[in-house]
Image 1: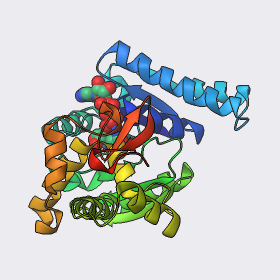
Image 2: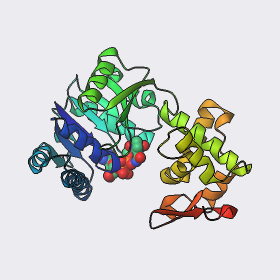
Image 3: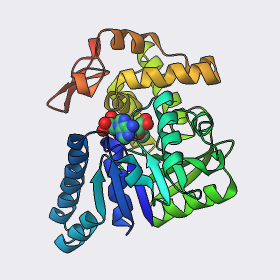
Length: 294
Ligand SMILES: NC(=O)c1ccc[n+]([C@@H]2O[C@H](COP(=O)([O-])OP(=O)(O)OC[C@H]3O[C@@H](n4cnc5c(N)ncnc54)[C@H](O)[C@@H]3O)[C@@H](O)[C@H]2O)c1
């Protein structure tokens, strides 16, 4: 089928790639030529990495690239699309505008999906004249590696759209979970609950960040402990989501004091060199504060 992906950033280019790898024709749209080029370059790099690791052949790579076209023209991107996936920045007003613009430029049966990680798809869909065609397709980062797609069913989503989303996710060989449109969906809500409790445990001196993380990675088989994951995601991002979930779901998502303090101090995790751990050149070299070396 014909798929349009709007936004060629971290997520958009990956969603375009996995769609093309499943044999779909994809148009990748961003607002400036340079962003489109960066997205296409990202796809080329990912695929080349796959060729280097013998996951696909040069010919397969070329065939995937041939199925992807870049553009800055919204109308050209969505006119013939069966599915449009928006991956523009996480801003409700922008996403509603994009949804409405897409609806004005595409066919009546086109499914319009959002890759939002935290916003209400129901609210986004209210910008449409036919909101029953809206659905959330929450990919994980990076989309070409991560197997899960959370399908977010808005209040207005009809059965056809939900079934279409499930078929698409299975077709691109990802695993689907279907969740109702509630704050934090299923994954962010549970992941954050674990992260916030781990932070409170560090504050209470229950154990060091490294010991808490090891407990979860070795004891529970998590690929990464909740504190290291917080450092990867960004403390500012986690704080923002916690505030949103507190507002929607209650005090159990109240952000711990140390999370606020660290964000105020500019210690946002791996990207700034310190969060609950200290990072150098992308590597963990110790723990933050008095916990010292691991
Ligand atoms: N980064 C993640 O880990 C992650 C994971 C899951 C979901 N998400 C969600 O995916 C969405 C995109 O996030 P991202 O990290 O890829 O952001 P990003 O900033 O890397 O990319 C966004 C892109 O959208 C482009 N853009 C802005 N306005 C546009 C418009 N009107 N039309 C087309 N393109 C436009 C920007 O130029 C930019 O290239 C957000 O809703 C985010 O919450 C992100």
